[in-house]
Structures are given as structure tokens and as C-alpha cells.
Length: 459
Image (tube, rainbow, N blue to C red; front, side):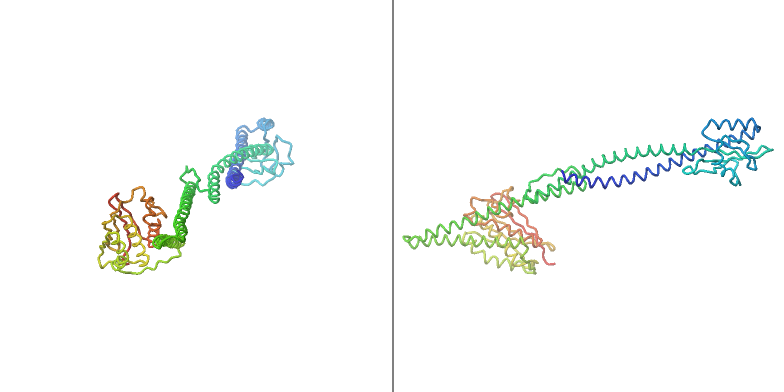
């Protein structure tokens, strides 16, 4: 949970800072807009009120009308001052002349008929003020309207209070939403972090739920694939070590046992030789196993090199035939090669021979007497297909996906009898992959198996 808090807090703080900054900017702009709008409304209303008094004066200009206008403003939140054209005060609804004297003495030029604002500094001034000119035909003058800014300041103060409350509430709700969202985002990350920790500790049997199709879902899928692959490799490693232990223990047991028996003094020469022959056979098997294990180790570590060159497939198969044909004939089995003379392949000749020898050895072991093993080579454009077909008992479909795995044997009951190590096809697959070729397998029970190598020819 501490990791969850760390990540969720980091994500939450980042999101909160970004969103809160945006909200502050928006609130500030909105506040300014509303405040200016309210001030403009008050100024516009003050101008309109002054114009109304002006209209009344121009229609009914007398002392009673002037006194009535002043009396109206006494009972309102505004003040009125009426002056003549020389600036002398005719009547006033306020006695605070010291605060408005400068506005009354201000120069008056080009005052529009509809009036104008002469003081709008509500923040530091005591009044906002407007002026409206009047003309009765006999007299001229000005109607000054004043409004105490304390009410405006109180209005803006209330507006600020409302915005502050709204801001705090918005920040609180935003924080709650971001906390929930950050936990939703951080949750899968924490699960993946815990999964990788389990992987680092050797536990490869983890299961990650993947319910999203976004980047987090892809990451979870990648970790799950890695876990499955590591679990498979762990299983393979355990099986590999168990197989090596078994394969090494069996010949060593034979060698040790028959060596002990061969040391007995009362044994005859023929019997002693038979035991020594068994020791020799098991030593040969052990040597073959170690050699193949070393080859696989080189293939795994990429310490072997592929020295590619262009050579004749037919000539290479003839040399391979000379090496393997005696073993086929000894078991009353046949080897047939069908290969045009003009086909050339770009490959490592030593590794190519190793591939063919392993596949032929596999075919020979699992073919009955009188069976024919056929090597057929064909070429189309630059693609060369090399097929090795035997007439053995075939490979079950469920075994085909695993035949290139190390120590995997289809017929485990006859593995010792046939003398195989279970590594030959693994070596073939590694060399084929190193050449960037492909190998395909087709098999029918009691009819035989065909291995087909798809390689490139002349470049």
C-alpha cells in the first residue's frame, strides 16, 4: 500500500496542480468579468438616473422641481448636485462637498447629451460620479450624480466571498476526483510492479488481469507474456537438468557396474570381453551426449560461427551418403538420393552436413528393415527444398510441436534400445534458425515422416 500511496500521491499532486491552476485562472477571469460587469451596470444606472433628472428639469424647470429632485435622492443610495453653467451649486442632496469638490470643479468640455462618467475609481475613491448637461432655453447647467463606493466595495467583497467558497469546494471535489482517478491509474501499475517483483524472485506463475485496451493493458499483456515465457523456460530447465542427470547417470551406472564385474578374477576371456564391450558402448554414448551438449551450449551462447559459402548440394549429399550408407546397409535399410546436379546452396557446408546427418540418423533409427529413406532436393527461383522422408512408424500429431525440444522422445520406451540422446533434432533446429531457414514436419502413423528444410540458393 505504501507504493500505491507514493504513486497515487505523485499522480494526484501533478493532476491537482495542473487542474487547480486552470481553475484558478478561469475563476480569476470569471471574477474580473463579473466584477467589471457589475461596476459597469452601476455606472450605466447612475448615468441613466442623471439623464432622467435632466429630462425632468428641462420639462419643468422651477424651484419646486429642483427641490423635489434633491428630496428624491436624499432617500436613496445616490446623491445629486445641480449646478449652473458657471459651476455654482443650485441644489445638493449631500453636504459632503469636501469629497466631491474636485469633481465639481473639473473642466467640462464636450460633455455628450447622454451624459458621461467622470469618476469610476471605486477601489480607492469615495464616490463614482456621472454628469448630464441640461438646457431649458433660459438656463444651462449640469446634473451630477454620485454613488458611495462603500456599497460597491461590499458587493465585490460578497462576490469574493462567494468565489472563495466556490473555489474551496471545487478544489475539494477536484482533489477527491483526482485521488480516485490516480488510484484507478496507479492500481494496475502497482499490480504490474508487484508482478515484476515476483518475477525477479523466481515466481513465474503470476496472473495479471487485463481489462483495458490502452497502453496499460498492453504493458500488462507484455508482462504476462514474459511471465509465461519465463515459466516455460523454468519448466524446460528443470526438465533439461532432470534429463541430463538421467542420461549421464545411466551410462555411468553401466560403466561402473560392468567395470566392477570385469575385475573379477574367475571370469573367462569371452565373458570379460563382453563386459568390456558394454563399457565401450556406454562410453561412446556418454561421449556422444557430452559432445552434443557442448554443441547446444555453443548454439545457445552464439559462440559458434556460420561460415557461409556457395557449394553444390549434390556433391555434399554424395559425401554424406558415403558416410551413412554402411550403417543403413548393415541394418538392411536403403538410402535414396534425388538431387539435380546443378543446384547450389549458400550455407555453412559443415553445419549443413550436420543437419543432414542428424536427420538421416533419426530416420535410420526409426525405420524398419527393408525401408527406404529418401532425400529429395528441388529448387524454385532462389528457394531450395530439401526433404528427408522415411518409412518409419510416424509421429503422433500431439508430439510434433515438441519434437525439437531437448531430450524429448516420442518413443520413450525404446530410447535406450535405439541409442538416441534426444538432442539431435534440437541441434538441427538451432542450426536451421542460425541460417534463417525454415523446417517443416509432416508425419502419418505407420507411413513415415518427412522433414523439409526450406533454404535459399544462389544470391
